[in-house]
Length: 82
Picture 1 (tube, rainbow, N blue to C red):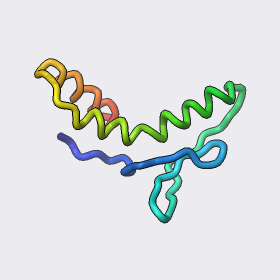
Picture 2 (cartoon, rainbow, N blue to C red; picture 1 turned 45 degrees about the vertical axis):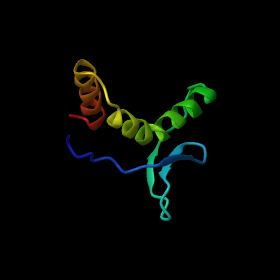
Picture 3 (cartoon, rainbow, N blue to C red; picture 1 turned 60 degrees about the horizontal axis):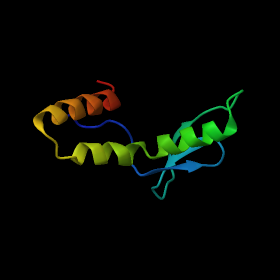
């Protein structure tokens, strides 16, 4: 498998509109603005983003049939921006 380039997790929602990693340095991963978007949806989106590295690792570790492996590998490539 290709090496991931994204910041290793875990990540967490920080403040109102940011994602940071869980290292002692608390590195900022992403920020986003809230315009006319529903606040509940915006916070839900932040939590999905914060869970992304854990979901990636879970999917990466799945043991699947050959057909499932092809789909999984395509999904992981998409997540890596390949």
